[in-house]
Image (tube, rainbow, N blue to C red):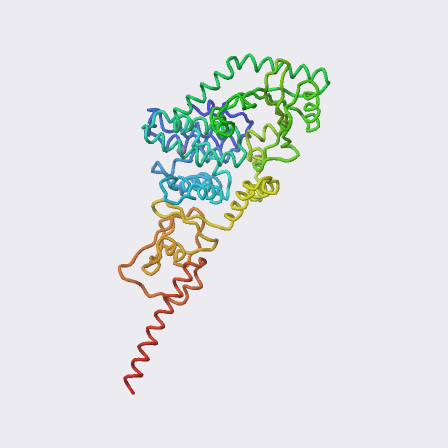
Length: 494
Ligand code: MN
């Protein structure tokens, strides 16, 4: 693929400067990955190219797309992050570095039952820059789309990870389109039998769905026309297999009790038109009692806004109607990416604001939280804002308070490791033992053969109560030792 083909697939008008950056990254990635192949047999670079296109669809930021093109370079080629920094600057290289670090996290096989939950949070907390997560999600979508070329066993592991970690993150960030695609691609592989069954029952329950949807569309647009309600367009959707599969058990596994198999989306220009359209539809089509959900007045925690209602059409067919403005629709598909201005005006400080903004967005979402479960989840999330997540060399995640040092890390790995700590490496570089750790750091403790002498100063260099307790205990014991010797000496003298 040449650069112009690549660019033409991203629906966005870039400035000449942005185009130059993208072309440079495109060429650079091509050169770095030269000779490498994917499991499919195609050139490796086709992966970062597809990933960049997936990302560009929802977040057409030139910097972020450039970083996406380069996202596998440090990990998989001889070209290092320093060279990327030299060629593309701090911003692009920080994004690439963030993606590389996230790639080192071991996602499964932990005994900790809260592992997955922690991991989701780590994902979010580590990447102070949400763009890193967006790149990682786009990366996963491309990997899922091309999963058939991978060995069956690996397919399953990747698909499970996708269901447990990546899809929930996409959901948390409100990126409906990505969440749906990730879930459905993974569903097929993780639960092949259930997938087949769910698809079959969908076909059975909706034998001529395309025709039905067309009729409903016509019916509803006629009602809106008669009532004089303005709208932009009406789209239709059929419930996705994974979402149906998750919903069925709550409805006695009876597909006929699920009323949103078919849904029409009325897209309007203004919020008041949404309410007007709802009124008009209810006037003509009988609503099911107690099924109006106003997520415009009370948005979902992930920011989703829409009005949902369930109605019968003239032929007593039941379906869901969703009403939202064009902006709400865009936000429902692109989530947090839609909240961002990706104009790269070069103004300083804007980037910082973007980072802060996304945390504020999440807090705002939490303020709108409705049920206890969501509230708890939000609360936990908040808690994790003051934590850092560092990795062992094997990729296990350690959760520490902000300001923690390698000493805290050592005691968190093993209760005695701190007493054998000769030194510490962070991201492969030797550091002082009171070095302040940051999220995403890979920390390695250099062990001595014999226990070392712990100094009083250590108490000032730790943040965790676990480490402090251990050190204090050690110091007390050793003081007692001296005291005892002194006592013996004194006694002997007598
Ligand atoms: Mn990749």
